[in-house]
Length: 279
Image (cartoon, rainbow, N blue to C red; front, side, top):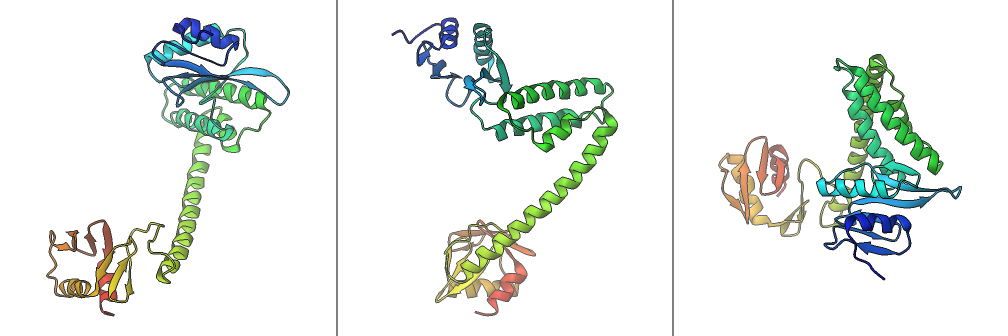
């Protein structure tokens, strides 16, 4: 069975689905089963799909990659005119990821409305996105996520301003919720580290911390420092004789002030003084 074709031939062979694989001479255009690719599996051009009703369609990417890929996409469109086409960001993405890509695209168009001298241009863009989203959701029988549906429902500047205000409040609340969860995760992980249940604090914090471990000091980044060296560092901080450029073990002191940076570690000066006083 022939498996190597010109680009034009390949698009038509793929459209016929009469064999499981094929490629062009340099392998930059190929298909495996129901999916056609450009330059690799990272860029699927389209994929034959069937919905729950037994209806068939060609799920087609909206993305572009290069001039060569654009030509391959054009050849494929022409060779598959007989099929119903449904568009999305990536034919091999999950529905959630495709909706997410549309949400980013829709918000980008909506954000231009506030200062637009010709808002109709961006309202048309939203309408174009809305059409694609509705066809996709209808074919697969799934609901459009609420955040995407809301931005696609914008019909004029005033609606956009109202939407933008709500989004701003939503983002603030989302950040607060995320920060709260991060603090909870940090406290839990830090307690485990303090209790020697872990040797490294995997949950990042702005600052690093220390614990006394027999004759050495452990950092939350897993570095061990002899107590004797730690005491010398403490005395230098107390005496204000610590200098940028000097080294603690193999770690260089790069910043001195309310924060002291030693290698990849950042400590509050007040914390080091408090910890050092207990040594």
